[in-house]
Image (cartoon, rainbow, N blue to C red; front, side, top):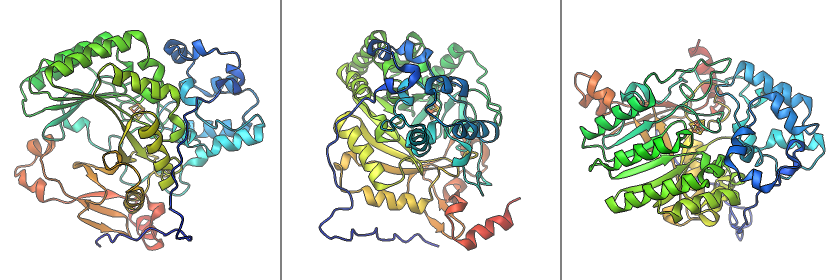
Length: 467
Ligand code: SF4
C-alpha cells in the first residue's frame, strides 16, 4: 500500500528536454475584440471602478458583451451548470474575462470552441459538460472541507497551526472562482448552495481577533484573508493591519488577494498604493515581514497590468509577492502548464511561485481534482527548471491535518484512492475535543483521490460502498 514513485517518461529523442524554456513577453489581450467593449479606452480599462461596475454577473450580461461571438449551446451549458452544479455565483471582472481565449478571432464556431477549451474559463466560468459525468461529487466531499469554521477561535479567525492563524476579514471577493475552497461562506448563494453568513459586525469581529492575538503570544504569523482583502474598504484594512503590527509577537503578515491578478487595477489605485506604502514602512520599522499572496492558476492571467501591480507593491516596500495557485485538471495539471506559469510569474512579474494546492474536496469539484499520485508525478516533473527557491511545492491540504507536501503521506491505497497522513501538532479541535490529545498525533487522516482516476476495481469498490 506504500506509494512507489513511477519514473517520468523520458523524451523519445535523448537530445530533447521534456520542457524547453523560451522567454515569453507578457501581453495584455485586446479587450476591444469583444463587441461590448469595442470602444472602451485604455483609461477606462485601467480604472478600478470601471472594472468593478462592468463585471459580468449573469448570462444576460455575458451575451451583451459577446454579441454573436458565442454559440447558443455554450449559454445553455452554462445555464445548466448554474442550475444543477455551481457552488459559486458568477462574478468576472473585465480584466479576468479578457484573459479567456485571447487568440480566438471572430468566427463564432472557433470562439465557442476556444471558450470551451480555455483554462481560465474552465475554472472561472464552469459549464455543465465540464463536470465529471459519473462522479461529479466525491462521497466524502464537504462544504467546509478543511473544517476552518470548526477551528474558529473567534468568528472568522481559524487557529489550525500552532504559530499561525487565518483571519477571514470579509466573505466577498472582486471575482468568484468556481473551485473556491471557502464556497461554504464566500460569495452569493447559488441554486445549489445556501451560503453561511458571518454574524458579527466587521468592527466587532476585528476587535475580537485583535484581542485573541494579544492574549495568544504563541501566534506570530497572520494570514489576512477573506474572501479577498481587495474588498475590504482600504481605511478599515489599513487600521486592522496597523493594530496587528502593534502586537509585538506578530512577526509575519500575509495579505491574501486574488485581485492582484483578477483586478490588478485595484492595487494600482493611488489611495491604495499610498496606504500600502504606509503599512509597508511601518512593517519595515517594526521588523515585520509583510507579503502579498495571490492566486494565479495559468500563464494567460499574467499580463503587464498584473506585473505592474506586483512591482508597485514591491516598490512601496512590501517584502515579497508570492503565488499560491490551485492545481486543476484542464487548467494547469501538466508539467508544461505549471512551468509556463511559474516562468511568467518568476521571470516576468516578480511574483514568487510558492505553492500549488491540490483542489480541495468540496462538492462538485471532481472534474478539477487530480489524484495524489498525479500530484507527486507533477512535483517530480517540475523539479530542476526554476531556481530552487522559486520551485513551487505542491501541497495537499488534508482535513484535520493541514498542508503536507504531496510526498509526505504515511500510506497510500492506490486501488481505492485513499491516502493516509499524520501530523506533528495539535489543532484547536484536538485540544478542545479529545480527552487524550496525544491520540491526534498517532492518528492517520484520510484524503481521497477522484474516483474517475482509480483502476476499475477501485471504481467498483466505491460504487458498492457509497449510497
Ligand atoms: S478569490 Fe479566493 S476566496 Fe475568492 S472566490 Fe476565488 S478562491 Fe474563493
